[in-house]
Length: 223
Image 1 (spheres, one colour):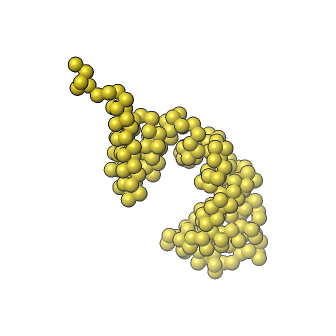
Image 2: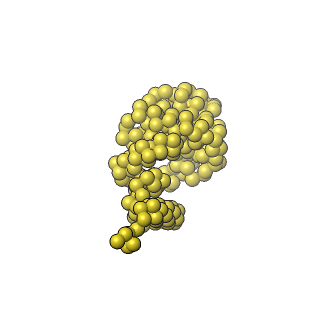
Image 3: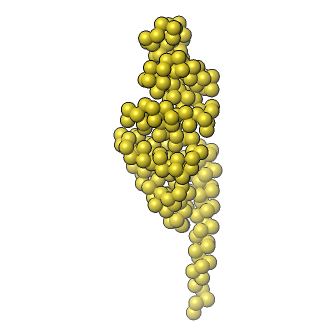
């Protein structure tokens, strides 16, 4: 008697619907700062439907934010395997490659993310950082400029741009960018510390400003 047996198509639809609901609830919990309950919901979403790549990616983001880098890396890789066109997964995996010190692989992932989505500012920012770490200053400058173009109020990207300009010896431009980063976010320790260092140590007398350097160094320490 097949009367009591669920139709396979109905069962599959039910699992997909449950997976969608768990993923959506997980997203809401994540937005509310409830990381562990959100991860549990993403687990349930993936268990109900292994192809729910958004849940896999969402889980990876939270795992990375909680310092579980290996598990996060596996989730980003799984996301890419399931949906090779999802740019954010490449960008996020690139960030973990940087954490692991594998700059070459990070650069590859960031470039792939940008190829898939030319407007993904965070990937340009990450690529700028990876190129800076790799000693490719001119490339880093180009990518940071693109990041700032796409996200004009991103203090971290602006300060990072200033870091590269400093390393290139373009001190006047660098100090302008540090000021712009601090204006965008006065609580940026990155911008305050970078600016303080340049103001205190710049070989150009016209740039050095000991009083302002001390003020910004103290702000960076406080922050």
